[in-house]
Picture (cartoon, rainbow, N blue to C red):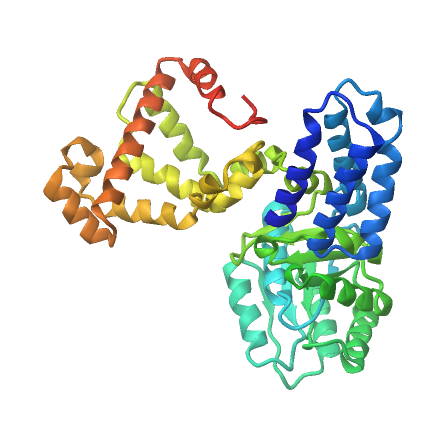
Amino acid sequence: MFENLTERLTDSLARLRGQGRLTEDNIKEALREVRVALLEGDVALSVVRDFIERVRGRAVGQEVLKSLTPGQALVRVVHDELVTLMGETCAELNLSTQPPAVVLMAGLQGSGKTTSAAKLARWLRERKQKKVLLASCDVYRPAAIDQLHTLADQVEAEFFSSDSGQDPVQIAQQAVEYARKQFLDVVIVDTAGRLHIDADMMDEIQRLHSAVQPVETLFVVDSMTGQDAVNAAKAFHDALPLTGVILTKIDGDARGGAALSIRAVTGKPIKFLGVGEKVTALEPFHPDRIASRILGMGDVLSLVEEAEQKVDQDKAAKLAQKIKKGKRFDMDDFRDQLLQMVNMGGMSSLMEKLPGAAQLPKGVKSQMDDRELHRMVAIINSMTVQERRFPAVVKGSRRRRIAAGSGTQVQDVNRLLKQHQQMQKMMKKMSKGGLGKMMRGLKGRMPQGMPF
C-alpha cells in the first residue's frame, strides 16, 4: 500500500540523509518535493499546506540544523508530523458499557460495510474474546441479508435473522433485545448504503442511531476513492456523531490520500484498515507504524504480531526441533514455510513491513509476486512422497512430469530445487549454531536499514 507515496517521499528525503550540513535552501527544495508527493498522493490541499508549514517550522530550527546528522533529523521530523497528522496513537474501540455494546456501521454502497462488519466480528471474537451478534438492516440491496448471514457463519459469530419486508429500525431494536437476553457482548449493526449521499439514507441512519444508541458509530470508506472518501466522511460526520473510521481496500491504494486526510478533515480517528478480501484481513490502525511504512522504515511490530497470530506455533516448534537434531529439511517443510508466508499476507505484505525494503531496486520488488508462492506450492504438490522427502532423486524425466502436473515450466522446477538447496544449507548452519555467523555474512548484502 501507498507505493507511489513511499517511493516519492523516500527518494526526496534520501538525498538529504547523507548531507553533512543542511541549509534553508536545500530544505526548501526537499519540502517542495514532499509537497508534490503528497498532492500526487491525493492528500487534501489544506492538509498538505498545514503539514508542510509544521515541518518547515521544525526543520529550519535548532532541532535539525544543529543536529550531528541533520538529514536523519529531518526524516524524523517528517515521521513525527505524519504521526501527528494521522492521530498520534492507536484509537481502540470503546466497549466499556453495559452489554450488549452496539456498533453501528455507516457508509456508501460498495465501500465494504458488510464485509467489514464480519471482519470486525471475527477480530472482536479472537482478540477480545467477545460474543458477537451480527444484524443486517440493509433491506434494499438484493441478498444483503444472506451475504451477512454467510459471513457470520465464516467468522463464527451469531446472526440475527431478518427479512427485506421489515423496518430497519425495528430489526436493530429486536437484535439488541435478543443480544441482551442471550447475554452477548457486542451487536454489530450493518446499515444500508446508497451510491451517493441522499436525504433518505441520512434520515434512516439517524433514526437507527437514535433507536439503538451505539457506543461506536464507524464510518466505512473505500480508501481508493481518495478525495471522494474524504468528502463522504465529512458529510457523514456532519449528520452523525461518528466515533471512528474503517478504511477499506487499503492493500490496493498506492496513493494514501484518504489515510492522511480523513483525521485532519473530520477530527475522527481511523480505527481499522481493511487490507484484503479475506475475513482475517483487518488491522488496527497504528499511526506511528503507518508513518514508518510510508517512509520506507518498515513495521517490525506489526510483523511480529502477525507472526504470533497467524503462524502455526506447533509446526514451527516441530521444525525447530527437527533442525536442531540435524535432520533433513525436506520439501514438505519447505511447503509449510511457503504456506505460512501466504497466510501472513504473502511476499508483498511481508516486504513492506521489513526495514530497508523500500530501497530495493524496482526489478527486485517486481519479483515479489504472491503468485510465485502459489506456483512453488503447486510444484511441490506435484511431487511424490519420495520426491518430497528426497529431492535429490528429481532428475530430467521427473522434472518434466512435475512441471506438466503443476502447469509450470521445467525451468520453474529447477529454480525451486535450487531455492530448496539454499534453504537446506541455511538450516544446516543453524543446526550447528551458526545463526549469528550467517547473519553477519548476510549483513553486507542486505539493503541499508535492515535490522541485522
